[in-house]
Image 1 (cartoon, rainbow, N blue to C red):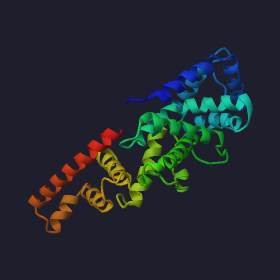
Image 2: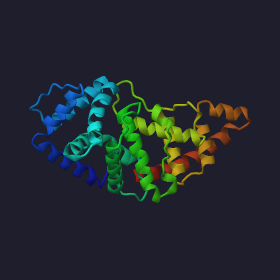
Image 3: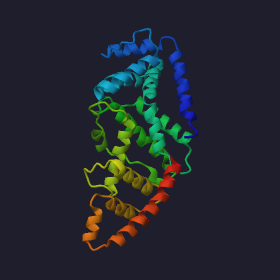
Image 4: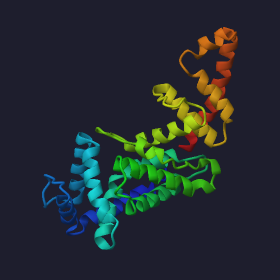
Length: 279
């Protein structure tokens, strides 16, 4: 990956925020008022606070992350230095997810750093105006709305790049247990919805493994204009378990089937090369 200056700058800025006197004490005070008591103590720095919060999130899952994020998001919606600090802590917690979203939004000709700047700017907007009454996992919804806004901002590059916002996704993105990568779960939810709408998946189908990767590639190829949606549907159908047997029952010979598969592989190899270049 090249051109990661935007996230390097964000980390450098975070180091300055952590060095400011009283910032950790202020954040710990807000958390304690909100019923989130940490063991790191008043002498801890913001790095320690965020590390303990992240560790508990991995162990306790959505319930814990929702609690402390809502405390800070409520502060972030205000004005002044305190609101800026609260927003900055949440943004820093979401940096790994922002990096993943930036990677996912890349297309051929797009610069990683330029896309990253859009993603970070959108993340700040979402954090500052997050509706606290919204149900579902906070971290997931933050990333989902960031993805929606960033995609809309990048629409000028290619109209089909835009990821439409579906209110139904809000209730779909719910994490009840420990989640290692909310950004990946959010992206797969969006891709799954797009795949169903494009006719690449049946409603309720959740592909995984190699088929899941193929469906994601097909969604990207259609959005990038590299593959007609009708052809993508054929490829998706051919990848289903038992597709070969169905073809043979319909009178397609084994030789014809292998030839069809060879053409598909050649076409997808070219598309996959473009996908790798964009990422």
